[in-house]
Image (cartoon, rainbow, N blue to C red; front, side, top):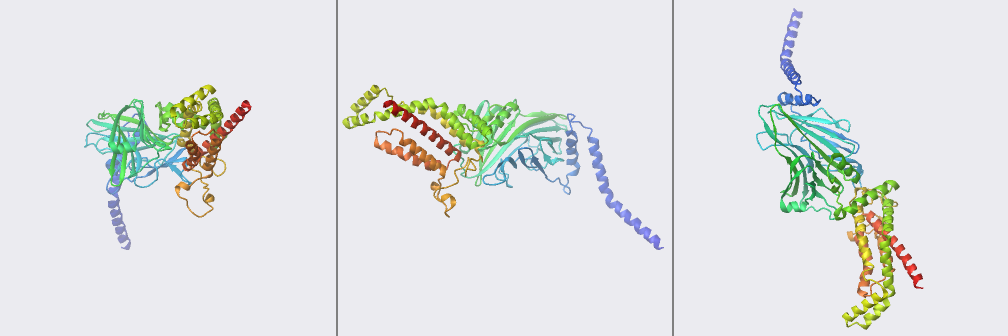
Length: 564
């Protein structure tokens, strides 16, 4: 009897268990049948077919209030990039550069600025439609994927289904530099044709009254219809929105050293929009693109491919992509200024010399020496003219005393002296003016080039892109007090000022005492001005002054011997 009771209890227990488990088991069987039956659908014969069909079935059966799809993070781990992409929105907003560090920190530099949860700076792409009834993926969409890491050898495929006839697939790959390639596909498995536009967005926010550097362009830009378009933050605040139409090209937002830019298919006809709005205490800037509508008929699939550059503005890398991707003037992401014809060759020369000698500071010195040697004939004419002026100064001063009250006669008399001695009053200025474009071009590249960033020199200079850190007024930090900005003067700016002073001492001074005294003040002014500039610039300027000083001294000694 006891055994019978036990068997009855076991029977009831098993029955209850079957009733509880069977619906769940049956539901799983239904889902597996659905997936297997739809895996026969082919999408261009690629391996993506399973994930696309899985997206269809999952969206219909798996996504319930009890079992929602959760966002996951896909790691980026290539030769030069690392970071994460969240399947929530599939935005690019967390990309770090392995070869570059944040200022004074050990962390890798971030292309999108400070990493936070506000998504203040991001790039995204997708689809848009004029029909509000079409559900499309957006920043709140959670995509599905089996991928966990994006590398050069392992692309990522994500999928999403709008449950109303459209299935979306995105394939993401990365190369060994800074280009991420994205191919977006849409398959219409519904009963009606739909019209879609491929679209991209770069979104950036700043606190109100943000100002960027004055000597290197930062902000929205693009190469559109064969022309560089730089739409500054200031211009956008004034205009609100600026529209362009282009075929191919590239567009994005640049910082001094980093660039985020979309590169579409070069035959694509696009509308580009640069815009600004104010939200509370923030300025919001957007760079958007959209294609012409593309009709997707039932059982049809369309695809669009974009490249997105996320990285450092290295001149060799930009030129490599320009050739590889068939895009024009990708190098103009670097702010070469108006002297492009000089600045780009000089930058290439500096990079070549730096790679050859292994030190950027030494490369600056050697390039400065080479430029001085090339410009020596012009400099020699300038110095010789100035030295000859020195010998006629007593005659000029005598004429100034004689005709102190008659400026017209003084001018005539001085001109006669110049003609008699065979001296042109602009003889010293003209060669200097001809040299100045080259020197200013070199100055420009030393300020803007990323090759200068965190490049060390000998001694205490660990970063040529930053001001000299050893301040003379607090003995390099030995004295325990902070200095105001205008007194933060390093050793190299002082050396530069001394070199300017010595150069002026051996240069014939102006016969006008006021002008002569003003010229003596110049080294002091330049010392304060250069104190806050990158130390690489100051080293260049100092070395250039020293070379000029040596050359001028040799010329003076040569002229003195000739006069004797």
